[in-house]
Length: 241
Ligand SMILES: [Zn+2]
Ligand SMILES: [Zn+2]
Image 1 (cartoon, protein in one colour):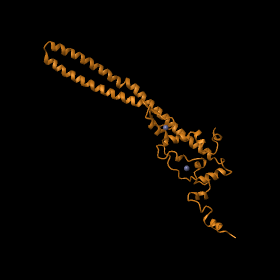
Image 2 (tube, rainbow, N blue to C red):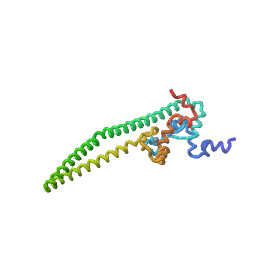
Image 3 (cartoon, helix red, strand yellow):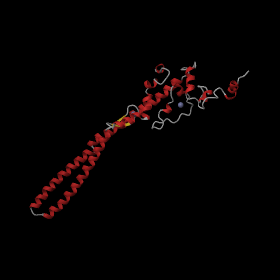
Image 4 (cartoon, rainbow, N blue to C red):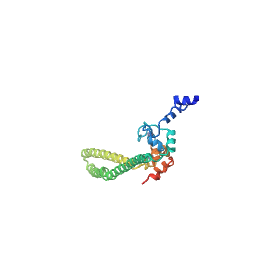
């Protein structure tokens, strides 16, 4: 005789008392709608949500029960999921390594421009300032001579020229100092070796902590294979060439 429970099982399925997300267990772990990365440990799409490196949402099923079923099955580690998973992680790591290299190149470039710039526009400005100062000195001496000779009008005319030259010199001096302080600021940048973000050298500790605890930085840190292995139920080494 069939029991009430068996009857209900037949009518509504064996997982009739499970929460909606557990009911997915009537989907097999090898079904195409199941996220294979998640079966291997975690889905990388969840690492960088709402950061610059967001991979976009994963549309596939992430189900703890399916993972357990996969791990217990005789096909565990035999269907190539782990290899695909590691390959994907390595492609993500290769991408951040490229970003770190680009960051270094960008900093080196701007630092080069600044140091050659010191001999360029800034150096030229200093030359011009020196030429102006020499001119002004000569003029002042002539004004003094004119004054002692009683040629007041000529002296006043020259004095106007001196004022003009002084203004010009002041303008050159102020642009030079702007360029220099700009260069000094840029030199204090560095590239984070984990996530590739630009950091300010000697930044306040709270800002440094914010970065280190930030989702993007943490996400890439998790990607480092040694860190990942602690989260997995299978040995990574068996897949490393
Ligand atoms: Zn997924
Ligand atoms: Zn970082």
